[in-house]
Image 1 (cartoon, rainbow, N blue to C red):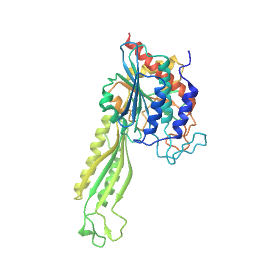
Image 2: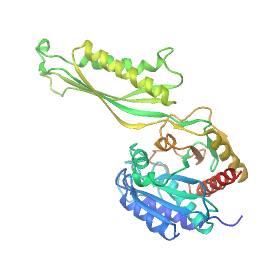
Image 3: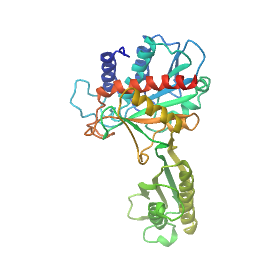
Length: 385
């Protein structure tokens, strides 16, 4: 098989992206770098500012066929980059500690491949998505009118996975990553002098009971169908004022589940905990949510096709026993279109994601490009049957 893409050029790009990471919703320069390099491949269309700083690059086939989207992420994390390399992050406190630089490099490599080998039919759409880390980007992209006009048929994405053999493919037969959301509970009572607490209404007891009940909520019998988890991540009661009985409290928790159905139940149950305790203690309560990620649900038939692509390229493939507990906002794509989120092993002894010592391994870029390229060919093959 002839060389799919210019490996040295793509690795150099990955290092450049690593040097200049940008946080969610601030990826303007990253998007510009992507646009500049993609223009050199002469795609049929480049659409900018989708859902923020998102960029869609379109390669059209010679005849009608399926529209297949491959997606990566633009954003870095607010984590120092401690790797000792020539391409260490130049932005203090910000680093590509999730491998989005590598994911972008794979998609650019795919663009290189399709510039040399134009699709026989259909369309290839490379989607460089903003704001994955804060859970906002994918939702905004799929609801952007310019994105809707692309009329997508299938969607695919990968995520590198430390702890798995380098370059191997990791598949989830159905659910790949968990649903999660950040829950914020605000409790309002009445302040008073600390020496006269009877003249106020402190939310302290309600706050303590809510923390306890939320923590043990997943253990309730005959309520959930699969794994659920509630992690209380922050709580605040009043102010540091020893002469004042507090009148306000906040409890923040992350709700997590393998399935979207269980997330609905978990949300209802958690809200009931907050409401019941507020009512019992004569408190006003307000509930809001942030960083909402649905479960990433894979299409079973497409998973089987990806397994076949792995065999065709002689890339080791394995299946997960259970979905990952972390979340990925690519789930907003798979809620609307048939698709698959799969893993690409980044090394057994690779530092974990979101670790300051983590660095995306350049030697798995080739397998990432091969898998995406092969998936498109497999889709065409099956569509022509």
